[in-house]
Image (tube, rainbow, N blue to C red; front, top):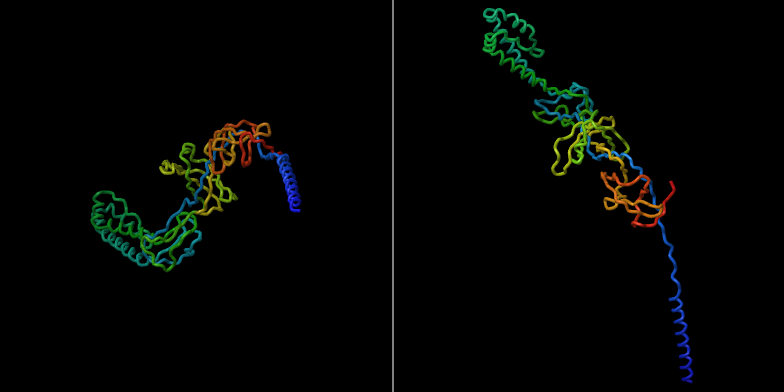
Amino acid sequence: MRNIILTILGVLLVAASYFGGKVLLDKRNKPKPQLGKTIKTVFIEEVKNTEVPIILSANGNLIAKNKIDLFSEVQGILKPSKKAFKTGTNYYKNEILLSINSDEFYASLQSQKSNLNNLITAILPDMRLDYPEEFTKWEDYLKGFEMSKSTPKLPRFSSDKEKYFISGRGILTAYYNVKNLEARFAKHQIKAPFSGILTETLVSPGTLVRVGQKLGEFIDPSIYEMEVSVNSEFADLLKVGNSVSLSNLDKTRNYTGKVVRINGKVDQVSQTIKAYIDVRHKDLKEGMFLEAGLVAKSEKDAIKISRKLLINENAVFTVKNDSVLSLVNVNPVYFGAETVVIKGLKNKQKILTQILPGAFDGMIVKINKKK
C-alpha cells in the first residue's frame, strides 16, 4: 500500500513539473508588445529678415526737473498766509509761499533809513556853498526819499572831490547799511520762483523759524527728469534729442520723452554711462518708476526672438523638410531683457516659436498647422 501511494505522488510531481515548464517556455517565447513611436508637435514661423532697431532697456525714478528746498535765511515767527502752507497746495509764480514776522527787523530798518536821511539833510548847506552845481541833484534825491519805499540809488558822482565829500560824511556807509537791511528784510517773505506744488512742509503758522532751518520742498509738476544707466558700449550711439519710449511697470501706460543730457564720464565699476530724459505728462508724479526704451541703432537682415529659444547662446532649432529638427548656428548681435536680435538665418527658414523639451538635432517632429 505504501509503495502505491509513493508511486502516485511521483507521477503527480512529474506531471506538475512538465506543465510548469511548458508555461514558462510559452511566456518566454511570447512576442514583445510593439510600442507606438510618439512624434511631438511643434509651432513654427517663417524667418523674415528685416531691419531691427536696437532698443536699449533702462529704468529709473522720476525727479522733478524744477525742484527747490525751502530754507529760512532769517529768524522769526511764521505768519498765517492766504493759502495754507500744507503739502499739496498749489502756487503760481511769484505768489507768496510763506511769511515770517518782521516787525522788529522793520523797525531797525526804518531807523537806519532815518539816519541816512538825516546825514544827507545835514550836508545840503555845505553842498550849496562848496558844490553849488551838485546841490540840485542831492536836493531832488532827498525830496524823492520815502521811508515806506525802497531806498533809491544815490546820485552819480560828477567828480572825485564830490565823492570824497560825500564819503567823508559817512553817507556811503549809511546807504549800504540800509540796502543790506532791505535785502534781508525781503527774505522774510518767500515767493514761488515758478508755478508748482508743495510736496513737503516742516513748519506751521506760529512756529519759531530759525536761520538755516528747512521749511519744505517745492516742485514744478509739469516736467520731470529720469536718470538711466546705459552700457558704455553704446555711448557713441546715444544722441541728445533722441526720442525715448517710456512705460510703467504694468505696460498699461506709455509716455514719450527726450534725451536732454548725457554724462561724459563712464562709471568705472559698472561700465555704464548716465543719460537724462525729460518727460511731460499730467499723469506723472515724482518718484514714479518707469522703464525706458532708447533706440540706439538698427541691424539689417536680422530678426528678434525670445531669449528662451536660443541654445547655448549661439544656435536655434529650425525645421527642415517640414519634419526634422535642425540645430543652426546664428550670430546674436544684441541681448535684451527677454529678447535677442540674431543674424545668420535665411528668409523662409522655419524656426521654432516655442521651447520643445528634449529636442535634439535630427529629431522627427510634426508642424502644427493651426493658426
